[in-house]
Image (cartoon, rainbow, N blue to C red; front, side, top):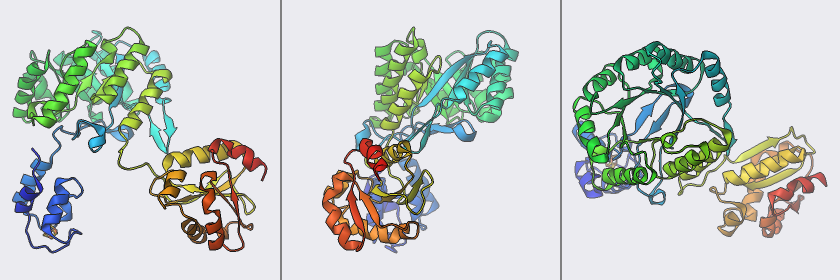
Length: 446
Ligand code: SF4
């Protein structure tokens, strides 16, 4: 269980040296307890206290790293039941499935299609991370060949899915360098599968028929020294599967149940007869509380909405997404190109820049730091005032890049025009449209 501020304070040096950036050890302890400070900020914590604090501050659901390379990812590490309490940290991993008996040419074609499923949104690259190699009974060689091809020729990381120990060994020999997740240890093979995961230092999934049956298995495996576990309660009926996800999250967070303090793996692909229904079930697990969601296939119409849902659910609700303050060139602007200013709320930036790009009118887009607020909210909160905008235009360097003296401000901030003019004598302040969608027509008149 997490320590209180006072319990943490008792473990600190109590010298009030201020090196951690706050005036007292008590203030630092309070910040640490509420997650606003990092233990490393205090250089004087003893090793013994560090150990106690690290253990106490470890998330109730263990973060488990999967894979290698650009699609390496972490699942688990969550600390709250509801996103608005703080934030969810590690986005649900989306996995597709490839049968081990797939023909080489078909696999090559599939990987080409899957690799292309990447979408740029708000400056992020949204894409799935995992492929499950499912033992289709074609033998160890076929399993290993499929795993090897995916590991060596694609960015995807892997789940090796077989309960046959020899087949799993062949898969590890072929693709172990990509740190695959082994699926799964069960009551029947827990000793052997646990030993295999330990020997190869790989994460291991644990499958049982219920939450109750999972606990002795995870306890046994942690007793063997394994830490990176992913759990599957075995439910393949929608209602039970959802109840299990909620039950596991609550048990780990509210009851401090360490045997269930691991991320989960879920299988919409085994709960539906078509991809549409699978997608709906997967959307449920993205919201509650699937660590990994396994689909039978990837298709754009299923994947794209899931990736967007994931982006929304796993964005920190307390921190608006922002872009860096500065000058952005859109479409090779020159010294005569229009100068447009707006706020640094990421959505505002991407909508405005997209509309300017679509207009084919090269522009200088000035992004003013407004603490991630949109135009109207920033103006109302005093973060996009005329003085500030004027000062920013003076300092940002745009005056060295253009010959003209016209600044286009957002329509929703029309009220600041006079103040900007005062701050920028000699400049013409033009009020642009309120809606970004009207920018192309507006810019074409310039
Ligand atoms: Fe206390 Fe450590 Fe902060 Fe110094 S750096 S005030 S010892 S918590």
